Amino acid sequence: MTSLFHETGDNTPCTVIEVDPCTVTQLKTDETDGYSAVQLGYGTRKEKSMTRALKGHLEASGAGPKAGLAEFRDFELGEDVTLGSEIRLEDVFKEGDIVHVSGTSKGKGFQGVVKRHGFSGVGMATHGQHNRQRAPGSIGQSSDPSRVFKGTKMPGRMGNSQVTVRNLKVVGLYPDNNLLVIKGAVPGPKNGIVRIVKVQR
Image 1 (cartoon, rainbow, N blue to C red):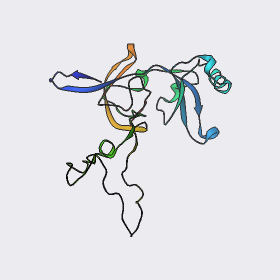
Image 2 (cartoon, rainbow, N blue to C red):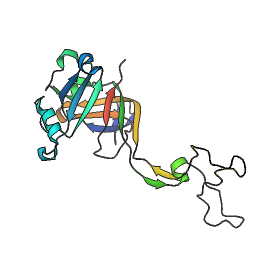
Image 3 (cartoon, rainbow, N blue to C red):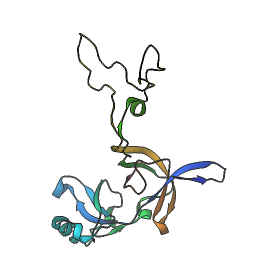
């Protein structure tokens, strides 16, 4: 992350996202697919690492080897979107837009309840306790109902899940460098891939 200073002197925490031009690889319509959507190809990859099915699909639109495909419904560019056309940063976003950003959060491995759920532990080691400071404590009942309820907060795998941060504001565009500056934090590590959806007003 970084920060931007405004004329008023306010310091705004921001995230800089590189948004390379995307190629329209498929146009889905209500007649052929049952819904309307635009499929975009993003990134680059070696041609030898592509399956023949994907290679043929991309060749139909004139797009080169792409790292992945993403589909967007209710795409607003309308008639300007044609098969094989290039969608650039400035074609979709402008300063002041509100966006939702989705990505895969950082994986933190198997964690205990203190880190995963914010438990405070059982307190100081008193009354003969041994290594119980970060333990979850009692989790169930004895004779009735003699089980642990589903959904009980327990230790487990933390992170590495799909996360969407909503209603972030676009505070800057740099089309020459394909950079989009968004106020706040977005999910995922550095160099991760995120999905940006503009909120329709």
